[in-house]
Image (cartoon, rainbow, N blue to C red; front, side, top):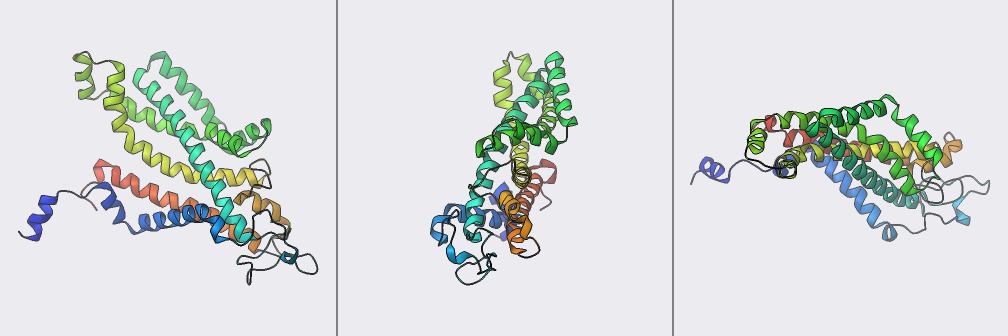
Length: 294
C-alpha cells in the first residue's frame, strides 16, 4: 500500500493531531503543563513555606535578598522566599481561573441558549439585561462587587464569574439563533420533537466547540482580572499567596528590588499568553471552515 493510499485510509487528522501540528499551540500547552505541574508539586519543589518569614531572608539593613543561593528568586520585604510564593500563588490563579471561568461559561451558555432558542419576550429581556451588563466597564463592576463582599478566594471567583459571562452569552446567543433556523431543527420540530431533545441532542452538541474555545480564552482573562483585583488590594487577601497580591505587597520596592515585581508579573503574562495561544489554535482547529488548511 502506498503512502498516499495509507493516508487516505487513515482519514483526516483529528482535532488533537491538528492542534499538535501548531508550534504556538504546543508552546502554550507546554507552558500550561509547566504551571500546573509547579502548582501541584509545590510542596516538593520549595525549601520554605510561602508564609515563612526567615531571619536570614533579609540583609542587615532589612532589605530583600536578590536572587541566588538558597533563594532562587530572592526574598520579599518580609524575608519570605519568592520562589515558594510564586509556586503557591499559581494554585490560587489556577483555582480561580477554573472556578470563575466555569461559572461564567455556565451562566453565559444558559442565558445565550435560552434567549437564542426561545426568543420572544424571554430572549428580549435576557439580551437587554446582557447589554446592560456589557455597558458597565468589567473592571469597575468587579471592583464594586468585590468591595461589597468580604474578599476571599471563593468570593473573588464569584465576582469574576458575574463579570465575565456577558461575552459568552452574546456569542452563544448568536450561534443558537442561527442554529434554530437551520433545516434539521425545523425537521425535528415537524416530527414532534420536544424542546429538551432539540436542545440536548442538536443545539448543545453544535455549540460545544464554541464553548471549549471560549472556556480556554476566558481563563486568560480571568487570571488577569484576578491579578488586577489582588493588586488593588480587594482580591485574594494575604497571607494567601497570589501573583497579584505579591506585586501589591512589594510595589514600594520596585526600584530597589525589581525582581519582586518582575517575576510574578512575568508569571501572569506567561500563563495568560499560554491560554490565549491554545485558545486561538482551538478556534482554528474546531472551525469547520478551516479544515483542510493545516
